[in-house]
Image (tube, rainbow, N blue to C red; front, side, top):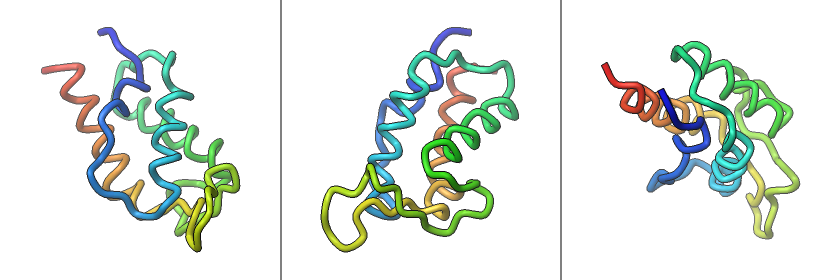
Length: 104
C-alpha cells in the first residue's frame, strides 16, 4: 500500500466550518506529507488526532472552537478552527479517502 497521509488532504472540501479550517487542512497536508499510510483505520485516526492536537493545542474530541494565531489572517473570526467541522466533516472525509486508497 503506497501513498501518504498528506495525499488524503489533496482535494479540499467545498465547505468549511470556520475561517481557520482551510489553513489547518493545508497545514495537515504539509505536516503529514511524508507520513506513510498506516495499516489500519484506527492507526490513521490516532495520527490525525495527534496532528490536530499538535497544530491547535486542543484535543479533537473535546474541541469546540479554538483560535490558532498562525492561521489568523485578519477579520473577526480569522484563525478560528471548528472542532465540530473536523469531527463531523473533515475527519470522516479523510477516513473515507483512506478506505478508498487501501481498497477492499
